[in-house]
Image (cartoon, rainbow, N blue to C red; front, top):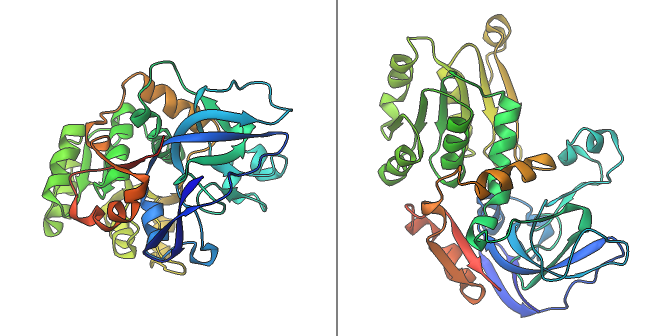
Amino acid sequence: MLAAVLVEPRKFALKHVEIPAIGRDEALIRVTRTGICGTDVHIFNGHYAADRLPLIPGHEFCGTVALFGEDVRHLKKGQAVVADINIGCGTCYWCRRNEILNCPSMTQVGIGRDGAFAEYVAVPARLVIPVPDGMAPELQALVEPVACVVRAARKARAGFGQSAVVLGAGPIGNLHVQMLRLCGVAPIIVADLSADRCRIALEAGADIAISDPLALKSEVMARTQGRGADLVIESVGSPRLYALAFDLIRKGGHVAFFGITGMGETVPVDILRTVLEENSLKGSVAGMGEDMHDALTLLAHGRFRTEAFTGASFRLEEIQVAFDTLADRPAELKTQIVIG
């Protein structure tokens, strides 16, 4: 099969490699589309999972069932599917609680093992999810990133009438905005240096978008009767923005840690203030389990605006160009690699 192998940071090599072998309880998926995720960009730049190269990245994928093992009963050949990428042991304390990222043997498709920037990808069959008939492939490939914001909203306990700030209006920041709107959050304030992305965030449901960092805190206070936001989601992966988030929450507010930083990067926390004000923080990064099913349902029923996510596509043979030009295309929130 043809695969895009990241052989070193910022360098893909198109190679013909063996189609993955599958076990009794696995499935082989013929890949149709794979989205480029912010995590893929971190891997591409050598900031994340560099010790795992060479690697076939890619985890936001959809495809059709090509083959499955003899113990698999719920799949049919040719069936359109997506897949949960988080592979745990299935029996430990964390797996039982659907906290699979904490499983001691956890790995992820396209991050810890070869992924879907290739014609085929192998996954445990239990993680393969059939999609509704007639659902467009470009929407199917959005299920995994939408599952991430579904989980983040759950972890943050986002709810009716809460105020929220989303730091970053890139692809995942835009999806956070839309997820918060579905949860009844109001007002939703988004901040990004890109005027284009601020505009798209407003179209997606943000109540106010701020591109001037010097105006952000005063605007947040003005929109929250001087209290600060109930919830701030950092979706960029910047220690500076994480520190800022604590200045934007109200007393008793919550900071959602979402954006991935470099290894070992830290942020100072005012311990006394956090204790006395009963502030909180919680990390969240990947959708798993029921998050995937809920994301699929929401997308299939048109609950997300996806126009800005489905316009940019490249063939697998063009993957190097697709990655090299991402920064030049800020208004295109998602780039998908067309494979099948």
